Image 1: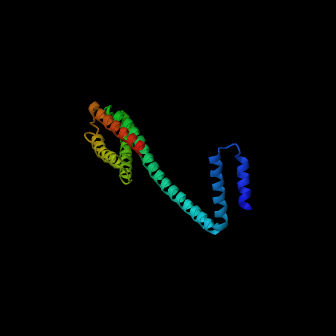
Image 2 (image 1 turned 120 degrees about the horizontal axis):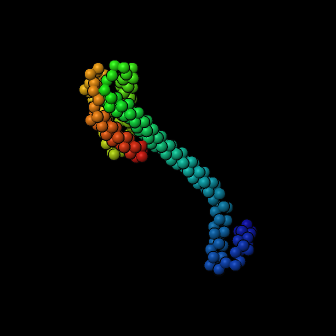
Image 3 (image 1 turned 60 degrees about the horizontal axis):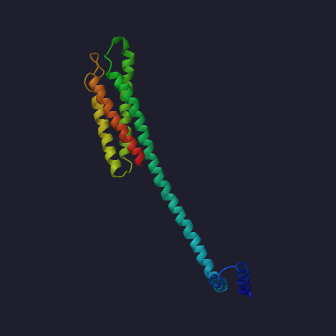
Amino acid sequence: MGSEKVANVLLGSVQLMPDDLVVFVERIAVAVESSAIGGFYDALVVAVIGAISGAISAFLFNFFHWKLESKRNAVAEAALSLKEVVLDFESIAIKYWLTDYKEEELIECQISEIKMKSFLKLIIKYSRLLSGLSLNSRGKEIVKSIEGFSDSIFDRTTGGAFESASRKASKGRAAKIANDCAKARAELTELGVLS
């Protein structure tokens, strides 16, 4: 009696359909009717197992997705922070090396020297932080280059007559510092985009 009711409802709603489609809908109605009566508990168990496995799959997907996003964000934030430090360092170092040491500007000169040392420590710290993160092969190449930059920029900036009363302006040293910093900023931008 139940299957006739379902079939009549379906047939009533599809009277304008071609005959093959009507037969197909009747077969679906019979299949739904027979599975609902004969295997209700089996269908319930399958539905519960399907719902649980779907929930677990969704949880695992979200867990790994957010873990990966967190790693990407950490790399991008570290690269951006280091890029900002390099930019600030570059402006101070260039100004420092483009001016001669003058007794009347001693305080400003000492402030620049202290700031440069501080920024150099930050550059070294951030480059070590980046090297500790898991990266793809290109990211690892960039981090090695940044570590090399942190070593070379320290030597280039603090070498020669740094902190000396006999320091003379060095346009060549300032240009090399600017070029090294520009290369490092470009690599850090690439690293931020890759992450």
